[in-house]
Length: 102
Length: 102
Image (tube, rainbow over all chains, first blue to last red; front, side, top):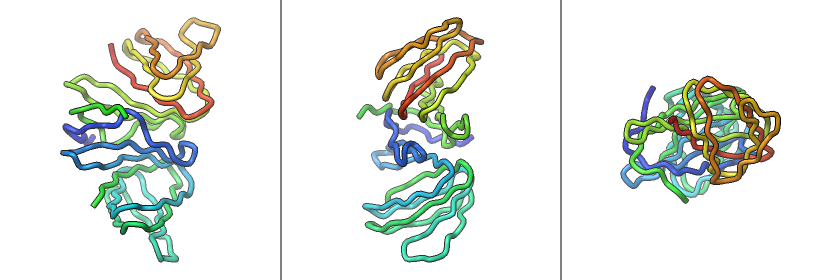
């Protein structure tokens, strides 16, 4: 099981969509990332800064900004987002991600 | 916001009850703890070793082993559990905990 070493972790989680999406901020050498859990459902998010999302467990369907087709991202794959965009995520099973700010 | 400093964090979450309870293992100086999120519902857990549960957000009702009355534990409060017991937790809103192994 992969472990993120020597990080700072926010004790409280971020709770979205009645808890169907939760994430936790971690600080790696002062750099913020979030690790999140997504329960089955469809969710729209917005970015405020450029992000890289990595699927760390399960898989997501993602509707990237400006796209009309959902794409599937499997465990280990990544996708990038610009600042100030909206995108949607759909999960049919519990899935997880690591979000890094670029 | 309280931050747990210089810890190791498991990248993957532990998923219980279809994701209605999720937790993440953290290692503080080699000592394992878990930080968890509980969505509204009632859940039964078992221990394998003595634990201290601290409510870190929201509140839980808890049915301690051998008790017939539910007790409410508010944010900041703790309760201890022996090894090899079962207990139940009930949350009406999203709540969070920190579990330490004694």
